[in-house]
Image (cartoon, rainbow, N blue to C red):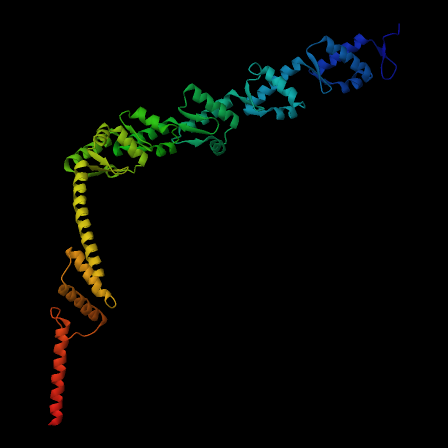
Length: 433
């Protein structure tokens, strides 16, 4: 009869296992669906091992009952707790799972499972990054994000925008993705880094098109700085009549002006400098592209109506021929003059006197070479005499007034002797007197 009975802690009473089960269930209900198992021995006046055995039997029988950190928690307690959490969230707008766990003395993992199972049913909120946000809070936050982004007129850094306006990062990115996907927010979204509003792109493209129409050219580098991925493709799509060059995009009117100037050069016999035809700088590759793009310019070069002197300079065939004729005449005159100077230099060198009889021999050789025939003996002597006189002049000696190249040396010596004798006689007479 006593088998299966459980004695109380004072030993004065006993209880059956079924009665113990009923008393444990009653205590769980009395405590609102949550009771600590360590509190039951004092309440039921039964040792803890008996209570633990009864609890294990209850857990196996009732699926709505669970043991969490030594506490018995029922499903209806979880529902009531979810309602309480929802009420607090509606008042505050948001709340973290960690704060809720501390507030209700539960683990964060348990609170997260409780909340996730009842989101949208009992708890009207949005869970993001461990934080619960009510629908009203999310709507207000999305409205702020929409207002700030709609007021943008230039590209902006999203992290900087979050810091400046104190947005919740998770809700901010969720809101901007939702707005951009729905078409409410027009522009270019680059991940979580930057956003470029459509109005900026519109104004930017309007500025680019106005600049191109006014100047007739725009550089690809300028469009690249505007964060345009393929400037050349964009310009070809917007201005299909333009001429794509290596570093810039040129209007067709600019090429027409170049062709008109080329035709004028061909008719007038002048030159054409391509860089001076446009008001912007061009590279050598750009100049090659212009020649290739212009049928008139390519044909003129191929037919040799113009001669391409370098990458930018073109000269008409008429001018080149005129310069060639002038240079040929100048070159011929220059060659003749140089030949004449050379002959004169050689003759002067050969006619210079040398020591002793070499001068006379050289003079004779020159006479014979220039005349092309043998000269008479008298002429040879005169040439030798001329060399002697020239050597005296070069040496700084004074010449006698009576020196004559046409008179033989023997006659002159005779005249000098007579003069000396006459002078001597005179002197003697003087002495006599």
